[in-house]
Length: 354
Image (cartoon, rainbow, N blue to C red; front, side, top):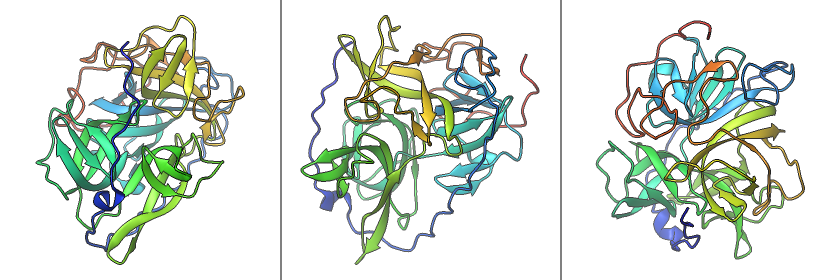
């Protein structure tokens, strides 16, 4: 696979954070969900149940009829808790292209968090890309998007490449008063803490190399980075296994992922043509399990179980895996490619899986 360039264009944060109206309502804090004991334990293969831990999925919605995420059809009850960037919402607010973090029970979704990668004003528009809060956003795969203009406040849903670029799967307009949000991997930059080149605060050894969420405060009519904290991989999942969508690039036996660390696996199946991959990773304390030395830090290494481009056929923790979809894996045909208009509205779960 051709190695992606790792250099990034510098952006002026003063441009990225142009003043815009203040007055957005404070986001409702997500309610914790206790997944308790049970789930599918430390394995995502078959219907194994080791009686401890839990399971989650992080990826893009590619279809409905239940929801299809990472090629897995996930039933959910009509009253499943859904949060849209931290605010409680109904199941009817979910759309194809949304990136979700799903806490799974044995047979259905227990909670669904729809999370944008960045919310903020557009500071630049180029061919196939836009800039939001100094984040480079690749929009070439979007089948549908709103009319975009500089200064417009938008929410970008997508998955990051190893170089920090966000590959957008959906873009939605937001009111000008909406407070910015930024998610990504914390890195050291010129003695400061940054997310893909955007300085967000002082360095923190506890956050470097980990995924963080940055909230913003309005000061003198201008938004500035406020609180920076570790972003739970799947809210409510403190220990277990997560199947997560990412982009990877190979350098010899080392696989660089858009997750803040390197993966190392001999004989790994090749990812999709665009570098998209789906990996199973352990979680402890709400974040990736430290495991071997070096894991959880930038350039750390970790051995993992990989599902291949779209994952294997059969079952995932007791959930049905649909037929191959448009991405060359087993992503599920309903709903079209990321960013397309939503498919049929979600409904109640279709019943217990076979």
